[in-house]
Image (cartoon, rainbow, N blue to C red; front, top):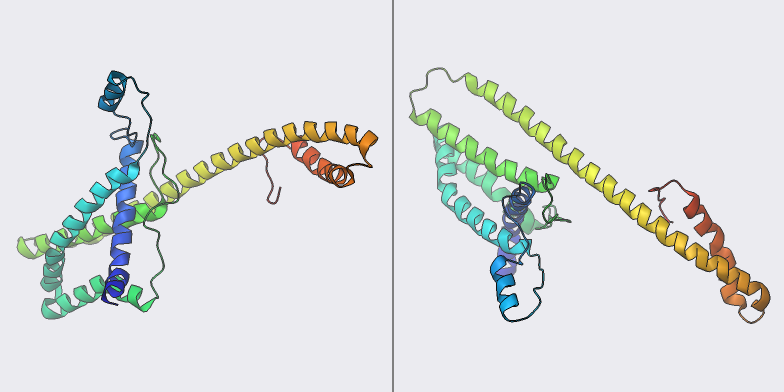
Length: 259
């Protein structure tokens, strides 16, 4: 019972940090700074020395687990500073409000009203140059950075003798515009990737349908002489032939739902 409660309470925090970790790994991968290809040079040298073939492997989760551990440690260490920022704003009431905000996702998860978030994205591109990750992963990372920026700014404004603090509104406007642009950039990047994948799938379906069409046409020719012995299969061939012919005549890359 206690373990189930702790799992439900901690799940939103771990899920958000996990998606942020996956997004960091994808950005590092897209920038060419790291690689999830586990066929390292020393493994290839060892395989060559043993006279064995080197087997390629990809395990981005191994790097993500390391990043996730660092994010968890950093968040635990940063929580006192967030509470201190709340105290700087509203003293005891500020601490209480900050604590409620921090605990709200866990309480909502225990109550069953927190949306179920997958800890990992649906797809990860190995060695994808320019790939920036998914929208939720980017938003998770941005939310963490905004929380850090807000805490640092509040503590700095409370500690340093800053007379004119009106410029913070200007910075917040530019921050909001920057975050909005980032969201649209990631969304556009993902839509372009989905469109390319869709077209590739359509081409594959069309090529496979063209091959099957030739086989069906040959079988229909054979059925004209042997239809009595294979009535069911010949009927199927006559039924499926127009559909395959329609797919084969479509423009390249076009694939309709249900085809």
